[in-house]
Image (cartoon, rainbow, N blue to C red; front, side, top):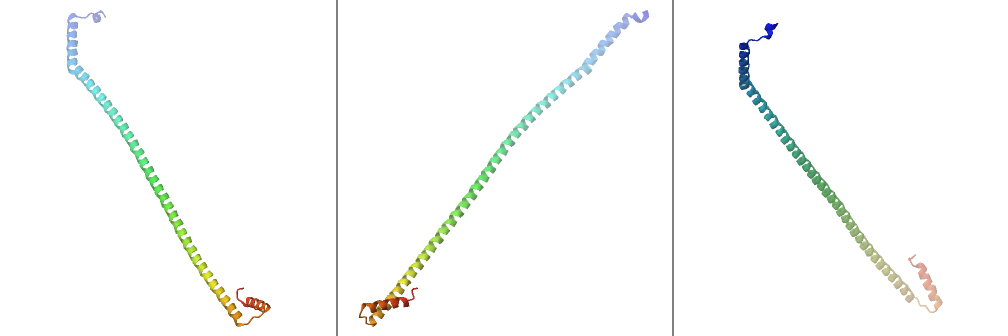
Length: 165
């Protein structure tokens, strides 16, 4: 066992030199590229995170723009509906006014027609009264009436004979 613990000085020297050479070679050939690869990977990750933040910000801006456009579209739709409702109300009001005016015109025409017929009836009645009066006067003149009793009798008889009932 003691032989295992005794090391020759040459073996230690060459082992140390071999280790240092391997260490330098690993440092130059492996360690540098590994660190560079890690650094590149870290930069790629940072770039991807920055792009993701930019994309998120762009998406938020797009969502805000979409919301704004949606609100504008709703406001425009409400305005159009309000305008259509106002136009319909105006058309209904105009139609009612036109119907009212037409009704008043027809009532005025009917009143004028009634007034004309009334005037014609009054004129006809006056003509009939005048005719009856002339008939009575003619009969009175033809008959000699000497006393008042015979005049009263004649007037009463003519009144009963007249067609004014």
